[in-house]
Length: 158
Image (tube, rainbow, N blue to C red):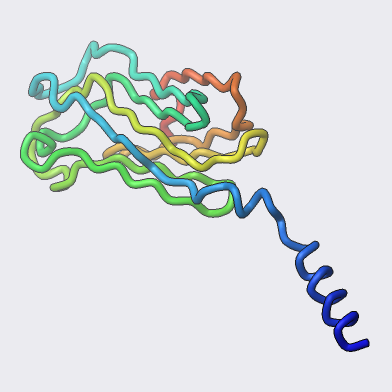
């Protein structure tokens, strides 16, 4: 009788496990690339439109920023990209490794990385910051048709 009860308890505990969680890897950021400083400038008047793109690519979220403006300190220390997660919130932060220490600006033609481990069909909220700018959160379902292209200037929170 004890053996039967023990088997029933084991079966009930096993039935409560979520197999999908065991299969899904933890989300992570990978393959961050940037074009570096295009040219040093004193101001950024008349620059090209800066775009933020979120795209589904082979099961990953491809994050691309074009025509960003950063501090010239990236010529010395480079650009850092940190990604963290809290439930369905993705916090994506790009900044100058040495901080904004110089009095000049660098247009960066392109920065991108892939975030793996997201669950297809799940709703996520993307929190993006670049250099000293915070952007409005973007909520989207992660699915194969995902291809959001936004003017970064319209996302800057004031």
